[in-house]
Length: 159
Image (cartoon, rainbow, N blue to C red; front, top):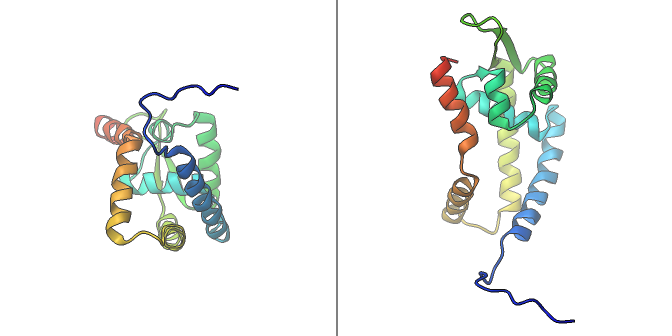
């Protein structure tokens, strides 16, 4: 069996390592979030809402890159736990504005504290500067467009 030549490829590929680290973080994250009644997708939504000070349900769907039907289910979970509040926009009654409740803010702080322990466990081989470098590189690679889209919409729509 002949091997195909690999031309102009870097000697180290990151995909498999990123997948491995992601899997380790995901499994540990799920185990510390479960006692708080949260799943990773809940945490992402709560974080976005906190960082933006709330936004429209439609903008949240865009930011999370989720189908609007799935966002409704996600928000139903969060609203039933009193973590978020949906209300009609005073400017456009067809739109819902979603904001964290005080309970949601407190639960998010607890979750972030628990997840800091997960990161310490998984990334324990990196010092503070290396972790900051890793964060900056991942943030850059992610394109951070998800939050930017909702921020832009929030300013345009006064969300």
